[in-house]
Image: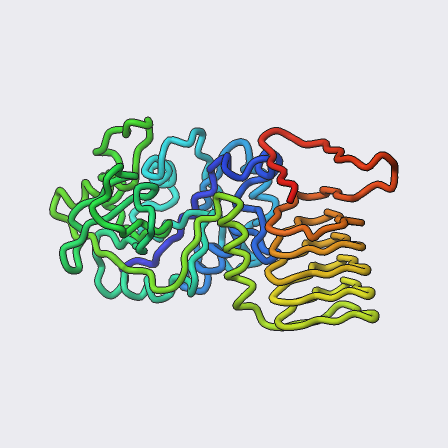
Length: 357
């Protein structure tokens, strides 16, 4: 088998994470202070994939290029592939065909996280050489996913978000293909929602007698497209983090697995892990609870924050209650004024959500 190439799809608009994604690509929203996209790149690099194509959209492509660069930071070579319109995953495969050529490849959705990486999957794909290998995981709500039916170790049918699923096995956002998938993508018609569905292309392989193998994911997998999923992914990643303290502690206490990056300063602060405090963050007279990621250059003062993600440059000051289960974008400032009368005052962008507990 030829060396595998990688294809990461990062062209989605991230409508479910607005307003964060009004100003940033959803694949760059951090989990445990690391952009989601980087987890996919790292997974491919560790599996020995040296050439990676990243599918980008016109709206967010330049930001992704700036953050991910040429791939040298990951030990790979990155090629950027512009997809003019979000016309489906199979369309993305066709758009990437000039880069992929006749190489087998791994396709990875850029806003997905998969525990344990893809080394075992790449090994199985190389050993068995099926026409496609798809990852599956049992889910409680299969009607929201692509769903597979199996006959032993073969996939016999696929359906995209079926109203009455025949199984609970959902397609995880990682696929492995032989180059024959390009012909399959050309052979299908757009779905009812006007997209070339990758499930239809894989079904075409099945219908023409090609071998499509399943792999049931044993660990966790997360699509980080919604706030609750982001917070859950943050929790899962922080749970596996190793304790490391490089910042400065002044009359402060840390408990459990905590990462404090170089340049962070904690004064009379308590941090209960698992949690991560980014470089240059300033924490004063505050409590940071479990499953919290404080980004680079953030400030928290006279406040309590738990089970939340704060992006770079955000500040939280003077809150009477605890802020929890929250996602703050870059340079967001939350504080309580001493002015009277006491009231709530907001400046909020489109598609925001505020809950007062």
